[in-house]
Image (cartoon, rainbow, N blue to C red; front, side):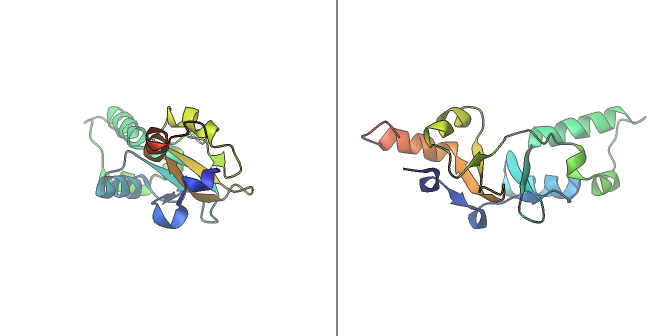
Length: 142
């Protein structure tokens, strides 16, 4: 068995591009109800994951630094998401990695981004799918 067994391909998952604004990221997360979403470059390379917590902390810190503790929507339209996220958050696994490595990663995050050998984003593996497999498998070893 390999990671491809669990893969949700890029064409079936949502993601953000690294050149969008904070407002666009908030709208995408809000509309879809996600708590986190992969961020990729326009040429398809996985960059990071942005979580609603990243956005909330940005909003809180932005408001804290204003006199009236308010946030202007226009500012959110100007701020690139890459100015507020860490690039090392939610590191990807390679499609050639061993499936058993996913279990420990899934304990820390809801999904694991999967990249090919050129670091291009090819999809995600969800914690739910890993747990479902382990719960229903007669052979509990990968």
